Structures are given as structure tokens and as C-alpha cells.
Length: 390
Ligand code: ATP
Image (cartoon, rainbow, N blue to C red):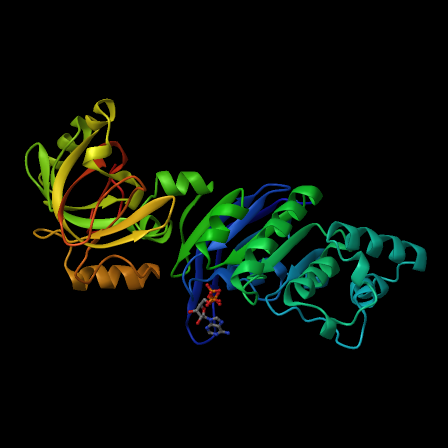
């Protein structure tokens, strides 16, 4: 097992593309870290540099305290699992899993024992004599993982290992990966563009954009305290709502009513060069049908009225899409932001507010409804740099 440290690691390709810039990351021994972000943000390049499949242009990579920038991939004692399983079609499951051990010239009995152990952990024992062609996608991916774990490497690197599987299988395999990692306690770096995988699998998540790290932290921390607009929009489904907020002395004017400013923000925003306009962020689940909020809770939030466009009943709750007018972020701006974070729902269209209300709400399409939202849960962003000011 090993700790992995990236110290100002960058990668530029010969054509001038800077794929990764100044990434600082310390991965503890046994930790499960997820690299997530939109397509092209540099996740795979970062992983490939750790594996040794890509040269590091500048900065230092240390495994167990030793600089390994120039060490060949096979000498790093790391196992990689890709989205394509890359199994040998003419070998059985047993032979596929034994292959790396035969290369390492282990004796027959040890190989048999290690394959049997890995097969047990991955529930592949009954399939050991099958060929890959006679396995399901999920089983093939388990064999690929088996081939990685038989070697008991220092670390696993996984690049979108589940993305070729259908949605249901992906959910099942998520639990397999999670259980496996806990059981083995092997340091793991896992690349995905799927925020559900990022939120559910890792101890910590690294959010990347344009080759740079945006924020690193446990999933819940990123969700509760996103450092900037990008992270706020990227984490959470449906996405956080973003609305324009004009700064007045003690409050913000927004399309969902006035929002009072706390003392600290009021002082900050009183400065000469402070922004006159902010972006207000509210997650869908922090709204509620005003009629359902008890007296005690009511005081923590504020109310507004808006026309209801669409009601989607999910059984456990209701997704309600509303139109708020006035000083909301313009459709063009929101679309740009949405494209940026790879989200599809900042409400650039008619209904521009997505809310998640209790199932008991009797809200109906076409009516004007009073809604409440929790002021303790809102986020305020500086539009010039995206920084979260709350
Ligand atoms: P995806 O989720 O689409 O796989 P990613 O986040 O893994 O994306 P990378 O594959 O790391 O992104 O690529 C990061 C950037 O580097 C992209 O802009 C990509 O086009 C660029 N890139 C990758 N390989 C090369 C190369 N060999 N030469 C030039 N540019 C490259």
C-alpha cells in the first residue's frame, strides 16, 4: 500500500495543449480518491501520469515518499483498470486472472491460491472456466478487476471502469467497487465524469476543470460548501438554481424576493470595489410549499409567489418547475454556465426555477403558488470570478 503525492504536477503536450496545470494532491495510504469533471478537464491525463503512461512535464510525483517521475510503469507496482476490459478472448477467466502472476513468474500453487482468493472476493468462482465471450458486461468488468487485484499492487488506478455498463449494472458494480476497496484497503484513484459515482464512492473528491483543481474534499463538504459557481453547478442533481441578485444596502433584490444580508457580507459588500451584483444559488431541495412549513422553521427562510409550469411527481417528492421573472440571470448567461459545468438544467428556457417539494404538496400546474426557501442554505457568488462568498 502507498501514499501518492502530486506536487505542482503539470502536463503540456507537444502541440501546446496544457492538459493539467499545477495539480497539488496528497492521497493518503488506503484512501479512495475520485477525480471528476467535464470532458477534457485533464482527469485521464492526471491518472496516466500517476501510472507512468504519460510523462510529467513539470512538478513531482512521489509514491511512498519516493520521486517516481522517471520510473517505468511496470516498476511502480500499480494496477490499472480501464473502461474497456481488455481481456484475452481465448483465455478462460482463470487464465486471464493468472496472467499477470505468470508474467511475474510466481509458482503454480501461489498463482492458484491468489486467483481463487480474488475470484471469491469478486464472486467469480463459478465462472472461472468460462471464456470472456460467455460473460455479461458486469462479469467481464469483475474479471478485469480481478486481474488487477491478484497482484496485490500498491495502488489501483481506475479510468471510468463502469462507463460501458448499462445504468442498472453500473449501480450494482458501484457497490462491488466500494466493497472491494474497503475490504482490500488499497489506495485507489478513480476517474469518472459521473457525479453520482463521485458522490457515492470516494473518501474525497477532486473536482477539475480546464486542467486545474477547483476543489478537493469529502463529497458532503463539496455539496454543502462549494468553493465556486462551477463546483456548485457541477455537484447536485437537479443542479443548483442560479439567479441574479442586485446588492442594496442591507439586502439583495432577487426574482424570489428580498434576501437579507448578514453582518459580515454587508461589511464586505460595502467596500468601494465590491460587486454590485451577485449570483444567488439555491438547491432545489431547499424550497418547500409555503403551506407545509411549520412555524418554527418558517423564520429561517423567506417566501415568494410564482406561476407553476410543470409538476413531476416522483412518489417520495415532487419536482416543481416555476417561472420567476425580473432580475434573474439571463438565459444566454445561464446556458453558457450550464455548458461550462456540463449541466443541462439551469433553466435557460421558460421555467427557470427547479424545486423539490414534499410529496404532500397539492401544487398544480398553471396555478400561482407560494413557496418558501431556507435562507440558511443559500449561496452567494461573485460573478466576476465565481467565488462563493457565503
Ligand atoms: P474525458 O472525460 O473526455 O476522457 P479527461 O478529463 O480525461 O476527458 P484528458 O483526456 O485528460 O481529459 O485530456 C485533457 C486535455 O488534453 C484535453 O483537452 C485533450 O484534448 C488534451 N489531450 C489529451 N491527450 C492529448 C495529446 N496526446 N495531445 C494533445 N492534447 C491532448
